[in-house]
Length: 236
Image (tube, rainbow, N blue to C red; front, side, top):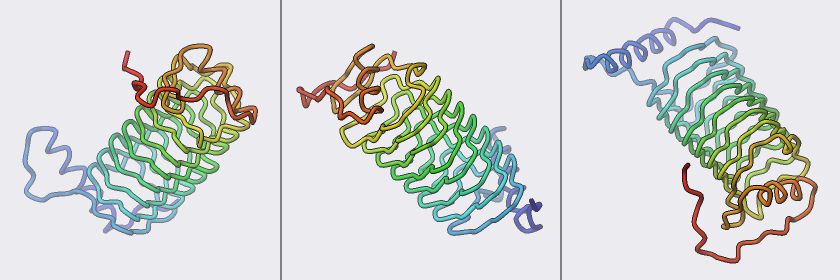
């Protein structure tokens, strides 16, 4: 894996200096926010890069080391991260609509409150990743290793979790609907499922787990919303 080019390293250094200055209450003369619109970076070590507030729409960061990257509040719709390592990366509140994260390593990565609608995670490993309140309608998580992941209050309506490994994952107050694919999911016996929003209805405890297990077994599930105005799960 290559080191960043001189020009790329200069951009990264400027971004780090800019954000470090802001955290110290300073107003740097030069704005160092990364602007990589449709930029392609391949096989490059970007470990610990500061991409906060970055413009990453359509960027292609292929087979890069991005462990520990800080990219919260970034605009990264339609970005491509295929084959990259993003261990402990921070994407909190970023916009990553239709992003591609195929064959990535996302262990410990944080996607809290990230818009991942339509995102593709095929072949990814996301052990211990944090998807708290992530917006993931239509996301493709088929076969993804989500052991120990936090999916608390994640919106998974229409998402494909077929064959995903959910051992030890937390799905409390996550939302699924009749279009969510769960066939072949494993690890549900050890997943934390205290409460779910299923087809618009709040379902508690054993009933929630039974519904997930039924759908993972290829059954349609037996619960359906009978109250279109059912309240969403509350925090707590």
